[in-house]
Length: 248
Image (cartoon, rainbow, N blue to C red; front, top):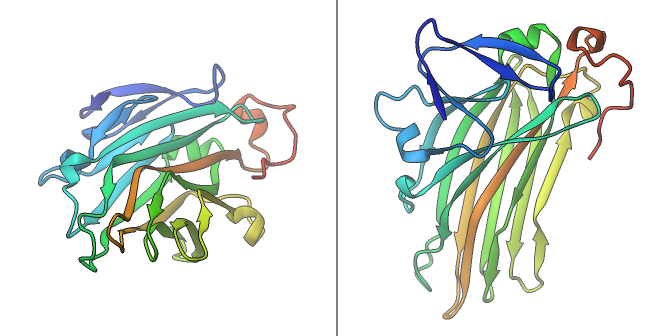
């Protein structure tokens, strides 16, 4: 993990072995694959609450929780294998002890966070765009009425447009309902060629309802795909990779 100071520049490699550029930032954390930053430290007074993974800048605008100690949670960067365009998908894991704090207390343990993800300017100018948003977790629950849930709402930053919602859940029921991952391709849904930035509002809830029941989760993953804008393949050095846009 590195920190960029004023006037210091660092090379970013986005497609494996293809795209070599540099970006400047002001005291922003740069996280390599599997690098970690503590959530409490990121949100501390005086922090700019920003970090870079690959070609993406993340800004955590707020985290609120009446139940959890954010010092016990970490953000781990993920730079995933290249897609058909030679571009690495970018992700992060929010990890920590998401556990209901009491049985039969009728209190839902929750956390709310809002952040933006944006393509760094020089990469955006070269044709990198956002399209897909993916959500996954490993939530579990037991006991009638118990549940583990993560829901999020995604907006297009530049227009303020509400794009839609993603949900993952493990509801004990009865009947039990489980969905460990969800994904949306906003470009397909709205017929666009990609976005510069998203705002994500995320809500995490955990509730153990019965004696001997449980509700827990140890990681929540957020992933964003990389696509080239029309006409940008040659600029990105991946001309000839003309397969259809990756669909989930």
